[in-house]
Length: 317
Image (cartoon, rainbow, N blue to C red; front, side, top):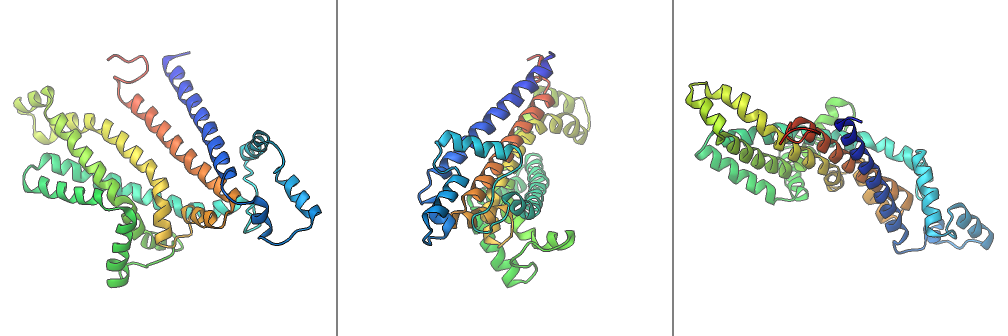
């Protein structure tokens, strides 16, 4: 097997093992959660012994923990996440109906982070003085403000005060969704944009100080050409890695934002299901969130290694 094939196989094996461990933790955590599953299933109403026995048998509540975990994992691998206790519908269908809103929000926020974060970082690195100082002060403030507080401020100023954007709901159709999700996306992206901007500035500054860059400048090569060919190309490797990891974290960060803006997404559905002890829904969403984060991190790791010749399988150091 080639070095690249061996590398990808190791990453794939690591991904599978991580997801397997995550599934075990998710199932175990919800199993150990306080409360009687039968009480949740029956809504606290009295149930005759035969009906209770059928419920316990249907949900394998009397089986050992590992047996129940195996039944659940087998169903998950076949795309069956069970039935919602509250809605009495398939969990997969309930999540699928809410997934587009969350994906749109995360993609919108990710675009803002990449465009604004990298642009601000490059400008700060190349424009020393007041411009650099202003951007650094702004990004420091942005990193210090939590997303839910940013969301509240945006609602008060731009939705309630100025009336430029709607307060609640995801909207319908691409244009309407873009309008409705602008404030949530900005709230979700602000802190991460500041992080990417500061790291971009540091990476570009470091590359600008490299000997080959200084040599190119001393030979009279236009500064803009040096920046494009030598500085940004090399700086994009760490920038892409951190930006990718930051974007992966948006999947979790969207939980709070969806709740704040009353978006009918997966994150808001998770919080609602936790409050109602709808364990099948909680298990499914948490597992999907963990899987998304792990898969994105693995892809970033692979892309980073393949993009940097020094880290590529079999590459020189």
